[in-house]
Image (cartoon, one colour):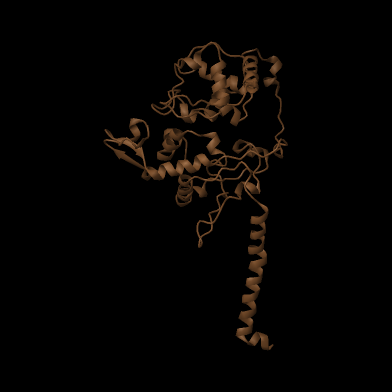
Length: 339
């Protein structure tokens, strides 16, 4: 009983027990993880701008609404090409000696997962407009705006990065420019890309795949060459509307209009299919378009539905394309060497 009556022995034993448990439960497993996990061979280290942007990502509370983890379930296929691995997080290091890094994997998806946002949306213009006011590009967005990351100037300097937004969202006679903080944050977002696995085995298949149910109304044998069971308007809203807008008019100086576009209404759909599948970045006046078709693994039927929606909306009047046409073009694209 002397042990329990002696506070020095009692609290000393409790302290030693705490130190021992901390070592075995936290410290030693962390050291083992660090020794047995390393970034994938193709992983690209963060640039100085991206490191600053990562700190801004944390300080502005982005971790509260966005995850950075692709779970091994079928519903997460939209966020990445493969399930996440321990190696994907091996490059995370302490913020400094006193502070550990934030848990960037996140715990809640109020907004979309950002594991591959650098591949899904590589456009600087889109990201800057979205940060300034998400409602400009996505009317239903509940994401807060970050106007303090931007400045309004009467006369922008040559080195300023001008952000093109509709007149209703900026002060009259002023030009909106991005601050260095905004550019750093976008640099971090654009760095978020899944690294390809080495070798040819490929990633493990996602678990719990949804069973596709074939309804009689969508039986492909009952559809004509130009008909499709896919909803082109819905697919457009999911994959294209954030940039090109519901009206098809795009955003001046940022995203090109599809209304009246010669690319959209061209009788030969080869170019528009190629743009959807491989993206496009050859226009100085507009931002880069990601490879929407490849990133989202769109089927020829879905691509045909999107194109036919665009060719018959906003006053456009062009012949419909068939699924067979799109299949042939997609096959040729897949056989082309990667540039």
